[in-house]
Length: 428
Image 1 (spheres, rainbow, N blue to C red):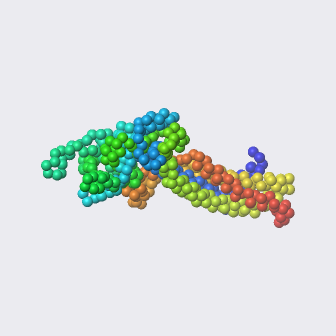
Image 2: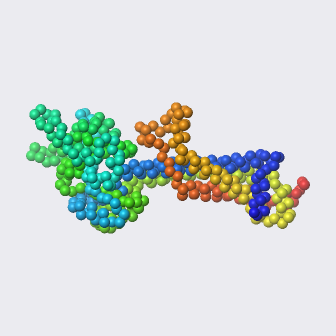
């Protein structure tokens, strides 16, 4: 151990007559620890929200989507599916149709997005099957017999439809009820323009956890969609599932290269770029805001070291008279700031890593004590507070904390190194 480090530790462990300095040291350590703990917990929660949102989006959507650049329907999709599956990293691919329609139940009308899917292939490219609350995806393939409401009409086979939970609640329908689907695009008949309209039977309800999807999305059979929208054997595009979602962008580029013009290939990050960019920006802003806590603790370090410099002026003068250089004096006080930063950062990390895995239990305890609901499920659609420790973010927090504490000690250390020997021993 160098003598600078030894003297630095001795200075921090104040005697009885210097308990105020010792108290300030512990307050500085506590301030650094509190800032590091807050940063780790908040960044973990924001990372958890981002991951939870990503999982919910990918629970209903595929990782990569292939469509036509001019928004025309994609024909000969079987050949395209084979080409897509040949790309390295692709697990599965399935055709789909997407269009806007209106659903009607009595006097309730809702404009939604309907997707035509192949039930068997859909479960290989999305997690729709896992999100089903009532019924199954394969129920779309089974046409149900429904009695006609008009007198004299016999039983008819109705195609099935799967609705989002919020959509079914808004329309006031349950599994087994009949809804009318109306297309905004009319068809030409001898009597003029007539809107396309068809009755569907609700065979299932899904809940993705995303309000926009649960309130505005429905699924029907691919063949029913082709017939309803007069697309013959065409589709809107191809859904693709990849092995590694973090490599979806590179795989999308490889698919684009394989298919070429006039196909457009987009990965999930590109399709939700604005949303995830906003989350990333919010995370950075929260990091900057919470790092101010460590800056406040750094100011406390500055005041503590200045008091130490004034208190230890005689000792500094004695060290200089014994041959200590200015750089050695700087090291003594810089080590003190570094020591406060290391201890405070370690304690903050330890407490933060204990809080994050038990965050939901802590929130539950607070709710039971104060009789409140921190995250109402009808507003946030969360049954728990998502959190995920990002070790790279935690490493950056540690580095920032230690560097800030070390930087805060440099000016007091410099002032101590410039202390004149005569000034330190003048009244001795």
